[in-house]
Structures are given as structure tokens and as C-alpha cells.
Image (cartoon, rainbow, N blue to C red):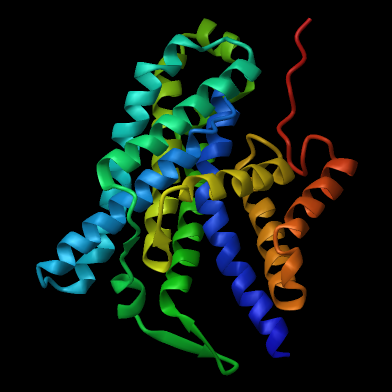
Length: 298
């Protein structure tokens, strides 16, 4: 019984973290058709920014409650600045190129961002446990869990609902869906596709940074933290269907519960089970569970 409870809670917590870290990646692919490997760099920038800001603030002796405001602020600043530099400085010159070339370009940007984090924050680890510790723990069937874990689950649910509402119930969201469906016709209809590209990329980069910033209080932020997440984020969006927000949510839940079950039942297969699930899904659904329909041009 306790094992099932642990799998359920840990799986839900891991799924929430994966969704926050991968939804920006699938959003960028859905609109811009770019497999953005640099997303791992935005995640790392968010984690370092939040850990650094929390550490600097707590050294001053201020109330811990304010650190919960520092996390989204750090993510927003890191995501917008880095996203704007990358999109306006590099990617806008590459639009329309082959998708394989874009993978190589974003991989190069990811490596650059990795070095940027080292130049700014050095190679030492950053620990910002105060926000996770301050909220305390809660017992579920005798198993203690940090309240902060449930805060991340709540943030993931709110982000998912906001994205769903924004895409389906606002004028801008509906125009964005038109751009996703066909960029050429959107441009012919007078929609400023370039502006949508820039805004979408900034939102995706900020969501990636938010995933890292929310994770910072629970882990030690070290160089290479972006490499780990980009692999799992790709697994999530491939399972759910690239470009699908709902697919990212389902993919995160599948990977989260699969990993939690492996951790509690057979730990050596922790990573193997993620790729096993991905291979099983792709064997029956080559484009993922909820892949967006591609328009056929004649």
C-alpha cells in the first residue's frame, strides 16, 4: 500500500516538473517547427538565476516568504533576455531552413548557453533550499513529503489551464492556432507571423526558465543541469506528440509514473523505462499520441 502511495505522489510530482520543463519546447515546435535543443540552456539559466537570487536575498536576512516571488521574477528575466537574444540575434536569420540544420544550430546555442552559465556563476554548485524547507512537510499515509512538491504540482496545473485558455478562448490564441496550422496562409491573411514567432519563442524560453527556477530549491544547481532535462523533455513531447500542449501533459504523466514505479520497484531501470515507454508508444503511434494533423499541400 505504501509503495503504491509513494509511486502515485512521486509520479505526480515528477510529471508536474516534466510538464513545466517541456511545455515550452513543444509550444516552440508547434509554432516554429524548430527542435529547440537550446531549451536545456534556458532551463539552466532559470535554475542558476533563481538559486543565485535566493542565496543573495537570504544572506541579507529578509523574510523567506519573499523568495517565492523571486523565483518567477528570476525565471522571467532570464527567459526573456536570453530568449530575445537568441531569437532576434540568431534564429530569425535561419527561418525556413531545413529542420536538421535548425537542430544543429540550436545545439550550438545550447553549448554557448552552457558556457555562459559557467562564465556568470562559475563551476561551483548553488543550493537554495530555503523555499522548500520553509513550507515544511505533510504526511500522506505516514510518508513525509515537502509541501513545496505540491506547490510545483499546483503551478503546473495553473500553467496548463492558462495555456489552454489562452490558446482556445482569446483572439491572440486563435490567431496563433492559425499560424500553427499554416504559416504561409496566415501571412497571406495579414497575420504578423514574425511577431508571433518572437512572442512564442519568448514564452517558450520563459517556461523553460520557470521549470529550472522552480526546481532550484529542491536540487543542487550544478553545471550540466540543462543536459539532463533536455533528454527527458524530448521523450515527453515525442510520446505526447510534438507541438501538442495536451500531449505534453499526457506524456509527462506517462513518463512521471513510469519513472516513479521503476524507482520504487526496480531502481536500476529508472532511465531505461522512460525510453522503453517512448519506444512502445512510437511503435504504434509514430508521431506520438496527440500529434497535430499536418496540412497537405498540393
